[in-house]
Length: 376
Image (cartoon, rainbow, N blue to C red):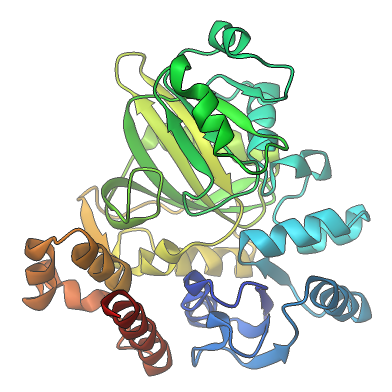
């Protein structure tokens, strides 16, 4: 039996809920390591729950003790959120333990994990197209920044996720106000804003080899284009496949990755703007596309890592995340979107997690709570 340990310190991070389903359907024995109230635990597709605390020191110590006690027990340890990855990346010095727990094989590239400046630096190191950037410090004045970067630019806090910690600055005259709004300027990234097509990607790697990927046109964002997405349209993109292969080998990606490119049509360049070496909510929804990540996990379980999964069709497939898109519709008064859910537009009801009542109950409870807070 192929043993998998799924790990999350972020109890409120709902994107972890459906991940055990993927591994279970791939034939794995699935243990989850989390606090009692965590979304990771609220499903019927894990074999064992290993209770821990959300206190960082206790969480870290418990996980390391578990792994070091029997290093060969788990064939795959998957850290499911940015906070967990950052915690363990900051803690582990042993290269052997690093490769066992962290989602990349090349410890020299650990700077990309949960660090925007780390990713930008790695892109420059390996010749990967990414927007021009500088690592801001108090020595940079507005004139020197304007000489190095073309406006508009983005101000990105080094550690942030789900679109938080990003500001758009249209011109140099607004830069000081934008900087004043940043509470933590440590490793603040100033990055040119590329006007183009946003491309959302999920990918699965093993020891740097690309196993599977899904490429999507973004249809809807929760708030603005820097926030998380609620509707996507998936399609095949062979140019992206080549870029992902290059990225995986150079960085040493070893697991799931949530990736974003921006395509500049005039320059015909795909700019890499984000690599989060973790799972996201869309990965479980890959079962509705032509590239099911469950099949990718099966390839890793059997050791077949040198042949990428080939989609059986090039037809575009629209996918939506139930609770997030409902919340978006209500927030933005998208009545057409609500009617689409109500009348099962394009079979949208299949995206509601009826297959697991534990997840469905917790999802509905969260939705009702959110709505009641807004009404109240």
